[in-house]
Image 1 (cartoon, rainbow, N blue to C red):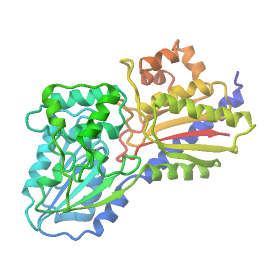
Image 2 (image 1 turned 90 degrees about the vertical axis):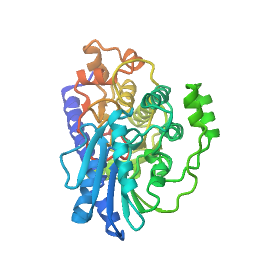
Image 3 (image 1 turned 60 degrees about the horizontal axis):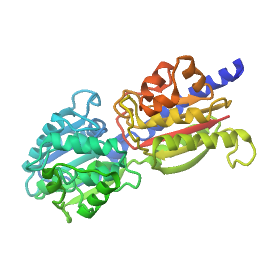
Image 4 (image 1 turned 135 degrees about the horizontal axis):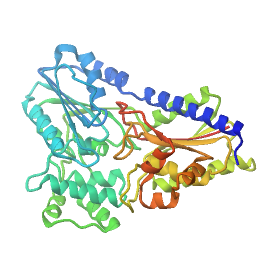
Length: 425
């Protein structure tokens, strides 16, 4: 049982969480990086700008400041509630994520029109960020939006990794896997890419709309067999169609990454008196497993026997976990990770763990993630909440909201994966 001074310490550590979250996100906002990337570009002919992804508005805003009145036309496609108002010269469209909707198609059509307008000697700047795979969508001939929605839902529900999802859906799309670049192949194209993929693979970020695709139909077969998936005959036919394998008119700059997110979290934690340890920037597993693993580290630190981590410390892991849906509740991978970890850190003093998505939206919720400490399980039980049942129903948001353990940041304007931090004093 925790005494009042333990509760006071826990509250102080939660204030540290707020500071680390704020500092980490601030450090990976794309503004400065976009301005630096564009300052070195030689602009020729008519200038067109297309920004798409969860950070689309923020990237377009930065571009607008550096380009000033040079742009002929601009289009922004971002997630609902991620726009922060009008931008001079840009048409702003909000669309669906993680499953594309009619506005995703509308946004893709507007950007395709822009690409078609660009002629020889013109310049197109693409500002690409994570989430673009869903937010920018145009079904291939013979397919419908419903077909792509069905495939996306099946892949999400079975717990497929984002790289696997992208390999499949880029074959169903008229803008993914290098196809968008092919539409504007007469112009010079510069893509500035904010990475939300662990290895910064251009083919995978937003499904590589301006990047040659090296995946093959054999990869599609492997993914289908791994998750025991089957689709309608017309979808199966489309999956056999190969993507562009050579693109030479695009220059690329990758900016921002989960490594920067973890480094900024470490710097912030260090300033608060914690010795930071970056465990990994390639966390890639099931969310519940990641939560259990972080809790195991916490218990080891608490035992003071063989742990290599020295208190006070911050153990940091970045990447992107997945959720294998077994229920119909509401939640996200970061919330599920935290709820899983809460079971393992129950009763530990001076121990707090949080996990957030850098874009400010964890799954289909308004929370960036969540926080837990040694008293979280007790608080859940006080509310009559069974943690195991909640995890089975994938209803972490509902449970954590009842005990005020959600982290709400709003749309941040960036998207460079997730960060999980374990604080031990």
